[in-house]
Every structure is written in structure tokens, then in C-alpha cells.
Image 1 (cartoon, rainbow, N blue to C red):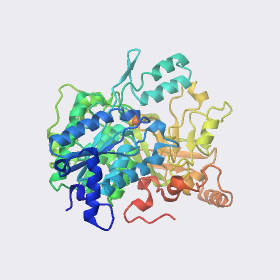
Image 2: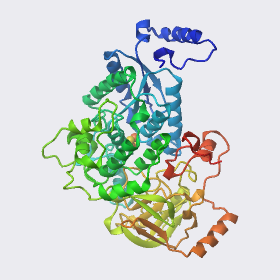
Image 3: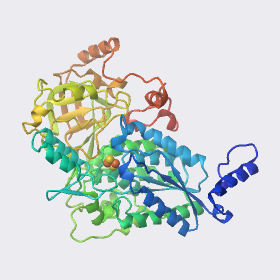
Image 4: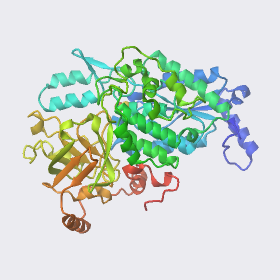
Length: 573
Ligand code: FES
């Protein structure tokens, strides 16, 4: 197989001239033939001034390069898109597939014998997994690592579960403007990703569980020296991958490793977004994740990790309790420990290497779980023919079986305009419904599924209600919230047929979500909708990436990837 600088030559009709020209330009950087004859390790640099979570990336790149050179390779750093949750309009999910395409094409276009992908903030690792599967060169991921915790008035604080809790307290009048400003300074005290078990932490843990990253790499704090040593070791491993004719990424992204990831997702109390991202990455490998299997695992695999938002602690506590290797060891026979890893060994090696920390309570034994069931349950019913999901580990036990009156919002904009209207006809027993917030309708399926409690109820002390939507929710959020209703309203899903005052039944133990309206009435409403289209969905964009997105994005049960990027998938248009 062609290696090094000879890989993927630019086409001028004369390969020797192409190599001659390439070397002439690369030598402009002062590189010698000795350097150019070494194994080439690409390093995807995702630093951006718009991405504070990736603030440590320059240091990580330096350490990875050191590791590559110590092992006799030549590091070649290159930039890709970087996405931060709070700096991406309309939502970071809208850009995930663009980052996946950018990363895939840059890996494919440029000569590299292996690649190190530095990911972190929520959508970056998913985009890189998708890219790695499609480009399919030997790949190792390294997360940027989580932030350290913040402190305020003797209480530990973390982005962004506590952002939401304290903002709710502010909305409910329980804390004042001065205090919320002071808290704002403390919630994200260092570089690194959100330090709760949000989407970033979840995805970092999942890539480690799939053997795509080194053991322990998910949770070393972003600012600790160990993180740099991990980066150096990652660089060394990348050279081993480049020289040993090592397996490409898809050799590690197998049905067994995706099933392992689903087990870990349930045990972590992980983010609901993790399921969409795993589905998308699996789709790139021609693997269909089975929602029924995921639901079954949710009934068998307990939540073992005591981290917010399902529990009490933060990522640095998880790390010092033994991190992913300890969790893998506790999960034991739920997992396929013979699954291969990027080190050339198996997942069993990761588990066997776990630090057994005496007296720790963050990673529970199976005999004393946080919750006997996994973090998520899958729902079906006439409201969600292709499924919906609820994070049961972060929901209110009293609302897991509930029937209430629908209070409908047509779109995220409608929600914003009316949720705090004192005249809104709503009680704590109602079910808040948000539609046209899915992949096509919003567009980009924003994290709007965490509908705020209407102010007039928040000030009365109401902290949770049943909320349902075709949107996503931040992994850091909590509440009795049904998400990813599929198909979405804008794609003709029955969520579009709900009217104010309808009864909606949620039955999590039996996996059901139903609109209690006669089928004949729903048929009439569907016919009405065909003649008078709803006002909620965003209009179809006419140009650019937005038009491509609108035309090609798949539903949540297919990972919201683009149809033309999934092998064997038919185009929607
Ligand atoms: Fe980047 Fe939370 S905002 S991980």
C-alpha cells in the first residue's frame, strides 16, 4: 500500500512530477528528506477562538507532536471546523454533518498514514467518528478533557446542569440578578468540556468504550499534566498505527463495539444525544442500531455512574474514582470485552488496567446502582410511530406514568413568545408540546426540548412537568422530557396533529406515548393539514449548506446524517 508523501498525489497526469512538486512545497517548511520519509501522522487541530471548550488544543497538539516524533514519525497538523455549543447558529447540530464532511475530506485529500482527531465540545467527537468511519484510515481520537468544577458559596457548580438549575431559580425569583451574575463567572472556570455527564463527556466515554481512544482519556481534566501525557502517548500510538499496517477505523467500529457503546451509554446516565450520534456513526459503517435492543439494555443495565444530571458528582470525581476502565470492569459481562482497541489489544486490557480506588462511591458496583434501570427508555405509540426517547434517570418518578392536557407550541419562536405569558392557559398537570423543532422543521433539531417551566408556574415552585417534542435536549439537562419524536412534525409526523386540550398519555414503564384522540378525528386533522399547511416549520432554504441540509437530512432514528453520506441509503429527493 502507498505510504507517506506518495499517498493521494495531486493529479497532474504525471505521478513522479506530482511527488516532485509536493516535496518542493513541503520543503519550504524546512523539512528534510529524512523527515519526509517517516510515517506521516495527521493531527486535526480543532482550536478556535469561538470554542472555549477547546482552549487547551494548542498544548495538546504540541504534546501529540512530541509523541509522534519520539516514536519516529512526522506529525502534520491541519485545521478543521470547530463547533462550540453556544457559538453556533441556529444550533451546533446543524453544523455537525458539515464538520464530518470537512474532516472526512481533509483526511482523504491529504497524505497521512494515520490520523489523530482532537475532539471535545458536543458535536465534534460525533463528527469525527462519522468522518473516521467514512475516510477509514487508522485513527485515534483524543478528547480535550473536561473542565474542573466551579465553586460558589461553598457549593460545587458545573456547566451546564447547574446553569439550568440556577437559571430556573432566577426565573422563579428564588435568586436575584446580582447573584446570578456572580454565578455566571463561576460555572465554567477552565478550558475543557462541560464537566457533567453531558453530551461531550458522554461521547468521550463512548469512544473510549469503543476502543477508539486510549484508556482513561475520556476523563482526565483538560488542564492537568496527565492530559498532556495522554496526548503524548496518543501521538506515539498514532505512529504504531501508521507503521504496523494497522486496522482502519471501521475495524474497531463493529456491531460488537457499537453494542458496547450502547451498554455504556445506559450505565453512564449519558446524554440522549449520544444515541443519535452513535446511530449516525454506525450508519456510516453500514450498521443499523437497533432501538429495541437499546431499550432492552435500558431494562437490564443499571446506571452505575453518580454524575450530574442523573447523580451528584462531576467528571474529575469520575476520573479519580477509576474512570472508564473501572466502569468497564464493573459492567463486565454486559460487554464484549474481546472487542479490539486502537492499542492492538482488547477492551479487556482496559478493564484489567483499572485503578481500584478504595472507598470511592462515584462508580457504583452492580449490587448498589444509582438506578436499577439504564438511563434511557425508548417510547412508541401513535404519537411516535418510529420512536421517541426519554432520559428516565433524570426524570421525576411521579411523572413516569401521567396523562395530561396538551398545551401546544407551534415552533421554538412561538414557545419563546408565549411561554411566560401570564394569560397562558396552563397548569402543572398539563403536557407541554413543542413541534416543528426537528431536523427539518427548526432546522437542525435544536436542544429546545428542555421547555422552560412557564414563569407563572415556576414562581409557584413547579420544577418539573411532562414536556414532549421532536427536538433534542442538552445532555446536561434534566426533567420528564420526551425527545426525538419521529417522524418529526415537519416530516408529516403525528405530532403535527395535536391540538390544545387533547389528552396525552405517557407510560414509561410500558414504553408508550399516545395521543388519546379518535383515529377518525386524526384523519380529518391530517386532511385539513394537507390543504392548509402549518405555520410552524421553517421555510425551505433556497441556497447553500442550508438548502443541502433541508434536502438531505435524515430523521433522528437514522442519526440525522445526510442521506447521501450513508452507504446504501436512498436520497430523500
Ligand atoms: Fe462545550 Fe459543553 S459547551 S462541552
